[in-house]
Length: 81
Image (cartoon, rainbow, N blue to C red; front, top):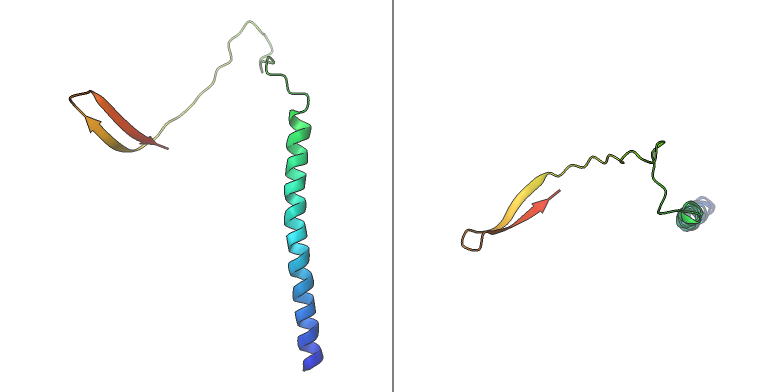
């Protein structure tokens, strides 16, 4: 019984140690990917074939709640999502 518990404990410790290493490796990979993507990034580049055409950007906004409403000052504060 003791050798089985020892083997199980050893296996769990190895798995836990390798999991932490995997997590750290994923963070390193993400940082490296971001660095590689942004290395030659050009802010003046526009994602259109014809540079004389405008870039169309669609956005959306959902209202979660109205946090504050002041009729006298005609001000309101919203909580968007």
